Length: 553
Image (cartoon, rainbow, N blue to C red; front, side, top):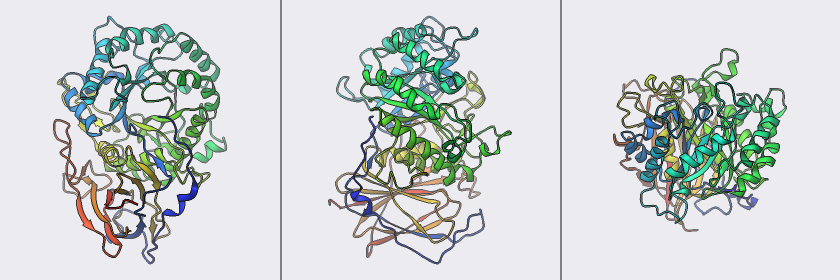
């Protein structure tokens, strides 16, 4: 999971844009029915240089308080299938729950304590998702990050000390993962220390030294710091006009933690973790935080993400570490109804994964054109709708996979974001030749269509087209002499009201995941370019993967 080296700039000219003048872009919902016209060109040759998308890029983050809901005996078969559909990835168990839930090797298994049974359920889930993997034969399809507490002890939680973390590893993780140590990608010490330590960097670094000195995570890899930051424009963070937490302390943190992180790197490598939310469910004191679909899909919020990822990925790479966004989703505070749980979240998630792998820093727009810097993965967070220990109240609005809140604790089901991860994992993950592709839209306020390319097998080139706007778009794709397939992710409104970005569901190729969590398979449309061109129409909130065949150059 090491950061990718910088690439040569020689291939930057391989992508070109075809102009299509004379059409204006209607920016308001319902203001226009005719599609916007745009154009894009995909060079059919294999890219020289370009970035890569690691094989274990996608992932989910699940609170400890929900193990039974996702990985207990009745939930596990479907959840393991949902993981298996993505083929490879990293599961993160943690979040704020890891600092408020103690591990107790002898306690009854409840929502409020971490027990050996929880760890056994996680192991059983990975065994199912990794069926056929032989221990010691290489990196398994799915690994897990296991979070334990590292936060200042309090009278209510005096157990947050190195001895507790050591017991978690020796009495919990070790027995549960006997014979499958490579499944444990890392043990994570603490969650959002910027908040837990009230911005006190020296106390945090002192505690890390104590935990590290006590070999709290041995023999497993360690990951830190999983920091969070206020929701603010990147310009305010860059000019330091807004109070940040540990954003500018990453160099000091990594200088202190990187040696221990690299000394015990496992099958998944060594990396530093980070969190990001573009919006927040609560925004009464700061309107900038307020969640809306236009804000979520705006280029401005994406620029904030790119600034953080590029800055911290570079700082991690400079110390020999990868960089993973271990907690990511639409809106802090468990998401926002009508924003996080609708089709808009799927197109946001798809584009955000590409920007994580290849951030385009707003302060230096061309510096990462060849995708030499980027994250090695992302984890979309899942939680209860209101508070820990109350799963019966329902799912967080941002959950990519919804758990069963009933007493049956039955099969988890995919939410809109899941389909974005499915599309990305099956067509982008594990590929090379990653590049952003310019899109020419004939309007002064264009830019809601995003395009990315990757190289598949020797004869395959893949073009992702993502319509984050609220109007349909007709795209002229220049791809000389190509036979192609198109797989389409589409908003699904069972009510028949025609909702798009605010539709409650998503389909791919008209299909949905089966009740047992399995994917019935893709069903692309096929065609052949004529005179080096073909047309693709994207509805509002739609995304497609165009796979070109027959090019070995």
